[in-house]
Image (tube, rainbow, N blue to C red; front, side):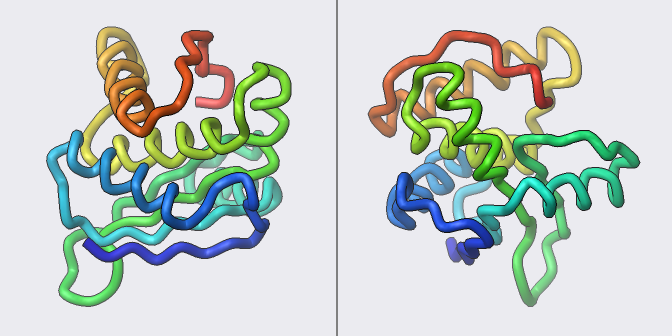
Length: 150
């Protein structure tokens, strides 16, 4: 597995090692160990622009994932993690920023593994998968709803 990590916004709350562990755990749970992904810790402006350009929705969002296919060169997918959103939401929810950043990363990776959260019961399945990954990484539980930005 190779992953490229890129920072538009520095994230002292989350090391590259912790991000890599979350990425690898989500890929393993999703049945795509070894997938090559790029991860961008992005500004809200970047996420809004991508959200509007590719999904026709100018509203803010917390994470976006793009499946680029299984080409010979380059990544198979990209995950854009909203750093400012994670910081704001973590503060509102009373959870660690690192946990919220990992949640967004795991959520995006699970989408690339075929998980969907558009409707029940798929949403419950995805939430359970997110919890399994985050629990396995040692993050404290946060059972409140996270569907505001989905």
